[in-house]
Length: 290
Image (cartoon, rainbow, N blue to C red; front, top):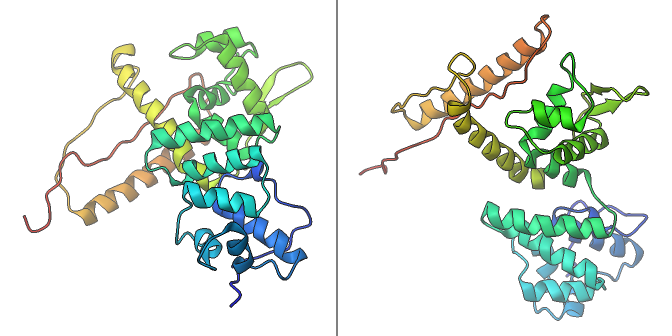
């Protein structure tokens, strides 16, 4: 029996593992590349070369029916003739994709980034991770649109609340320029750009959670940092049904859209950058039937 990989597309060049954030996608593309050049290169052939008993082992991994173990990972690396560095990257990618905790995911993705930098293959996904990993990247992007903004790391660092290091501001500007979120003109001034930012689905959850966590921390600090006239921090504790909870979440999403539209269409010039956090989460549960 010949096992077929779904969505198999011929490739002109071998896939570069250092451009991937999902190891299953890489294995699928790598198999597709070899299969297009050799009709005898089947899942059974790969399994035999890797010394695996199941002829469908590769397909089951690609289809997310099974995970890669440390042992099977090395066997597949040998079967596909991966280099030592490629194998190391694959190991960290597997650990990143399969880790249960965000702490572990962040740890292994940092190793992924290190190897990408060594191979000079930083991806948009890597930049996306960078963008959301520091709260001030989004703040600087908005700050650049305000009157009186100065393209100076010292000025930017001083005007953020809380302040950051000039070196951090400089690195953030470089990132925003690479992503096309800011544009530098001949006179060295910066302007805000609004290109479509493609989101890597394998990184979006991790990156956004990092961002939301850092903004939630700033929200706690805002209670002491600003007066009541400068901030709005409030909450309520309510008992709701699961259906009602879902409806409230939809109301929150609609409210955020209204706020964004209101701010974008405001004809008055902006003179400050605000962060709005909306939190709605359970603080107690009751088991059904208890």
